[in-house]
Structures are given as structure tokens and as C-alpha cells.
Length: 405
Image 1 (cartoon, rainbow, N blue to C red):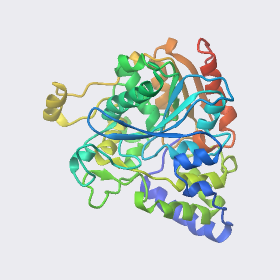
Image 2: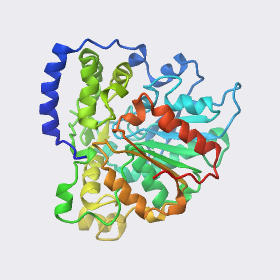
Image 3: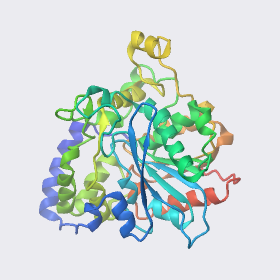
Image 4: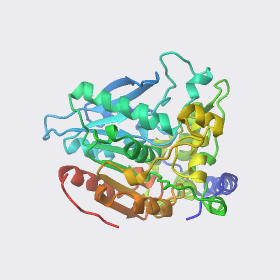
């Protein structure tokens, strides 16, 4: 499905906004809209811990853990990573018992929700947010340094050398594709890779005119520069500091908010989304990214699945080569479950399917194509039965061989 350009989406959204304000009744605002992740988990009746990890390049990662509970059979750790300009709040937005962390916890797993760098707060052991050095990172650093730090954090607290699964939505899924294709030592520490609407760009690049025909990548939607933070991106739309405007506007729109989300992100249908939980999500969205990372997204869509292209001279300095190395999906080392949507306006299904043809068949434990848009993997009314229960089944049957094309 072709993606709307950002300007076209804004124009249509503006029209729908006016119509919806006139026609829709407001959506009640759940209390979780104003709670942080740990508070939401605790309010849902689950134990929670808060942790931090430091990457090898000095970034502080913020994490929440739902530890194993005494009332269920204890199982191993699961590493859960959010997507582009998102925090771990997106996983608790659906609420209990059907949100992914709660489903995993109820099955006995030790759940680790670990943010990527600079989310929700840009924190470094040496730099502050006003220094350009804080924002000199792309997908590449997340795929290596952040994933390593997250796995080490889990190992240090649990003693477990491996995690039962790494689950990533959107950019979190892309990170899994990158990490476990390029870094065999990281793949060896993950028993199952689960991608939820994670883009996969098969090498080589889509050449010439084909690149122009492709839908706009996530990074091309918009990147408002954060005033006073050179190199920072305030998210795809709106401002990080103005997140309250998003939830208030979403609540005021009522069903119109779901219509807007479906228009921009794609969806199974507006009646498949709980409007109040969408308000909760917008209470914490968007978070931060870097301009360099957004530029990397545009490169991925144009040139294929490769490390950041600094230009011939920069590449020589970084890689000792005039061109960037590639993330070779044919080298995917981890048993994988890939979920993607036929109505996703951010992640073109044909790209995922092309990548699946390249990935080693013996590593594709499960492939699930659903009539979902991008946010359906977090908020769809049926996402538990369609996706999360399937993840649990795969985790409890690690030697299974089910594949659904």
C-alpha cells in the first residue's frame, strides 16, 4: 500500500481534524495517560523494577523489569525494545492483561522493557543534550552498543547468558534484523528474535527509478529539530515537550483520533482500535531521535540494508572502505518469528517478503502476515490472540517448526 507523503497526510489530517471535532464525542482520558511506565505496571498489579545500563560509548539506557512472580511457573528473560521515536510506554499503553508485557509475565517470563539511547531522556556519562556529540548515532550504534548493553544488563541481574527472546516493534524489529544478521556473538545470546512490523531492507539496494517508487520511509515523514539541541530530532510529528497536546487532541477527537492514526499508519479498521488506549499512547509519544538516525532511515529506503553512508572519505575513515558494509539478511543467525501487516503504511509488505526470501529458511520459525497497520501490533483489539499468544506458544515450544506464509 503506497504511503502518503507527509505534506499530503498533514493536509488530509487537517481536514479530518475539523470534521471530527464537529462530529465526534470526546474519548475519556484513562489515568495511565499521566503515569510513567513503572507506575502503569504497578497500578496494573504487577511487580516492577527500574534499571539503567551504560553502553560502551557512554549512553545511559533506561529500563523497566517485571520480574518472575511466585504465582506462575518462572521462566527465562525476554528483552523487549520499542520503535522509532518511541519509549517502552508503547508496550504498556494497551493495559493489562492484554498488553505484551503482561501476557509475557502471566506466562511466567522475566520481562525486560529496555529503551534505546536518548529515550525518554538524553543521558550520557560525558555529554549533555546541548552538545552535538550526544546525537552522533544511527541504527548502527543501537544495533551493536545498545543491544549489547541490554543483554549485559539482563545477564548481570539474572545470571542468564541468553534471553528467551528479543522482541522489537518497528525500529526495534529493524534493530533485530541488523544485530542478528551481522553480529553472530549477539545472535548467540538470543533464542528467538520476534519482529513486530519491523522493516527489512534486502540487499542490494533498489536501484534507480525503483527507489523513487518506494513508499516514504519512516525517517522522511518529518524531523523537527529540537531548539537548542543540535543534532536532536523531536520525533516524527509534534514536539517531545508538547506530548500533552497529542493526548489532549486525541481525546478531543474521539473516534476521529483512530481515523487519523489509520490514515497515517494504516490499520485493520478504526473499530479494531480501543480509542482510550490510543489516548494513553499519545500521552507518551513522540520521544526523541537524532537527525543522523533519521537520515539513516532515508538511506535504508534508497540504498538498501547497509550501515550508515558517510560518503567515500567518511566511509574510508569508519570502515576502511569507500562504501558501507551491508547487513546481510542471508546471514541471519537467530531462530525468528516475523509478523508484518498488509495495511502498514510505514513498512512496505513487499520489502519484508523480499527479505524473507533471502533469510535462511531454517531460521524462520514463524511468519505471520496479518491485515494490520503499524500500530495494530500494539493496540489492535485482537492483537493478543493474533500475535502475543502466538509468541508465547513459540517460546514454550522452542523446537517447533510452524511457519505460516
